[in-house]
Image 1 (tube, rainbow, N blue to C red):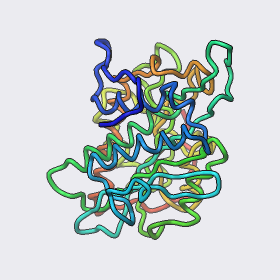
Image 2 (image 1 turned 90 degrees about the horizontal axis):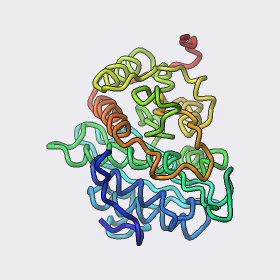
Image 3 (image 1 turned 135 degrees about the vertical axis):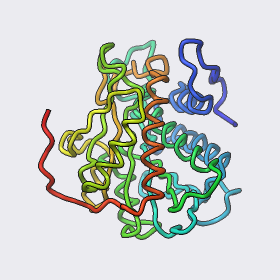
Image 4 (image 1 turned 120 degrees about the horizontal axis):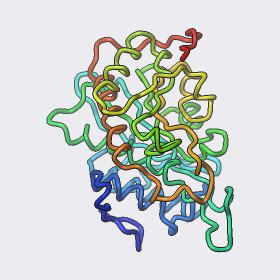
Length: 309
């Protein structure tokens, strides 16, 4: 697997995640990629890291040749999404979308000093990208094709009012009526406090009615983490899941919320909790596999009363 130069990829003894997960986070959060601001050479480098991973697992561009890296790019004003599909079998014309934004803030965040002026964005959202790729890798390496196709979307310009995911929805490469649900990652492998290393959050499963609630709950029950099931309003419309829900697509948003290093130079590789991230990937994989296979598809359900805690 080709990565950007000078990025250490050996996991530490204290945290031994699946190698490709660590490598992806390390590459995207490296100083060489300068915080992944949109419209920069570093953004193109980030796209290249993602595309190399997609090619390695055999995920296909939605059009064009898999040998052409540009076939995976969906360009738009001042941005580029990276898209790929793992073709399904019996219901190949239906889709589960799994996605995460790959952009970050470049050199414009809190904590800038003369010693460190790079907003590396390791948990926000290099770890989310790695999670989405890991889900895709596991499905692509399965013994059989998924029943439905799995579309992997890596959004640019999330930090600029969700421009990338909005572009996907404005000019969808597949019919939106054929999308049964969207699984979103944003801020993964993070801890609000040491007491919350075994706690994470999923948001918005009620948007798919009882079927999605049941599938998400069952997926989370297979994890050692305590996964709080929060209503859509708790996501505060602050990630790409919000625009999918607004478009009438059921969503589940996996997040650890805004840790102390959020949007600071302190969001570096060293703070990523890879043990937690592996558990989060497992939950999302179980949910994605269920959505790809089930006869009990989610039905978009707006205006569900908020859960309370």
